[in-house]
Image (tube, rainbow, N blue to C red; front, side):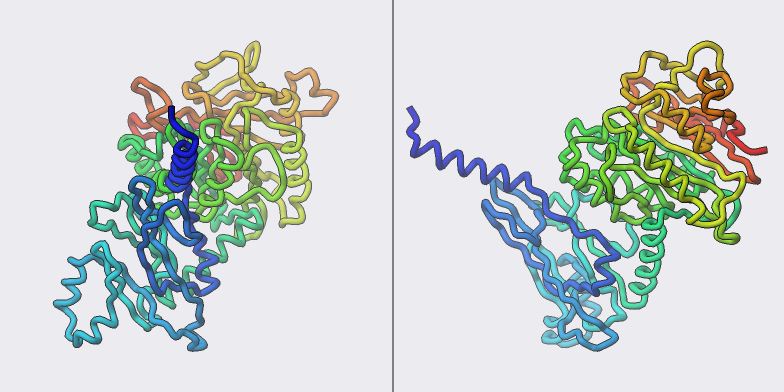
Length: 499
């Protein structure tokens, strides 16, 4: 029989071990905050620690309850006021790169020792005091994912202990000012819920149900998305739910998220993520995800300011910046727990009623709404008009009020585009005149209820055709079509609204 005196210490040790290996470091990836506060790296060190987590440390390796932490030290200064007393880190290199630097360097050994510092594990810090050099502003640690973010570099330590890579933002003073200007402008548009178009035309990609397992992207999906983006050059990408499969996902492993979004970041196209049912773990954990996602380059997501259904509810006005007039409204609604609720509809009304205060509104403004889980009205009865395929027809398990469709009609939406159902890619015309309540509510316009099909490989077990849906505002018309992986061409072109 095991004594209590033995069991209790073992339980305490195991508990500390569990907390140590499962707790995630906080990744500081808010470039706008970093550059505004003139943050610079001045030192980096490694430290093995058991049963404790330093507030500014990042786990880079683990071994039997011990974590090896990468611990950065930062300084804040203003180059223009000459208040910088420290030398700053401009690169992190291994011994091979250090040897190359040694060969090229004609300085004395004493000067060279001042320019480099060995920090262990075959890594050196390279220092400088010149603002003309690319100075490291922040450090992240990821599971050796590709780095495509602007002004970021990465190094994979050669030590066998390291399964993770070190990523760092390195930018000189001039580039820092340029990048800060871009980030400030982009952030201002995001806060004001605006999208700008330099021409009267605007193209949107609806990509959905990629179902990346643990952030892993299959080659065929990647090629399909790359080819489609290159060919069509969209102005906005809406990732409309089920980006991930969380069967084996640790919510605090941001490497998986960055790996999945790198493709979109690399094209420098604004994108919005709408959470689907497979994306949710819990509200608290998804808030942590959203904090990370919303600070990534070109991402239009933000944390919710008011309580609503789910976390990814957004409304953006689309402006032609030549005329400064509103030509479109794009609403993204989170169907958390496979439903819409009345508070989301009320929020839509408030935003639509407030449009005149946001600028001159075109008489033929186009309104698009994106949801992951379909409304009950996506199951029409009797005869109806459709463009595309409609294969999944089983009852929808949703508590969404069927009458919400009348609110969309009242507000003048032209289309509601859903995802979730992998084998449906059609657009169904919901004709207001055929609805029993149309006379009472004076509903005259029709609304298209569209599906986008599936864009990724994990959504179906058997071979299938990857697809995505396109919307384009062009020549006072709203058009839509789909792109197929099989030939890379568009098909099922249709007029959604306009002449």
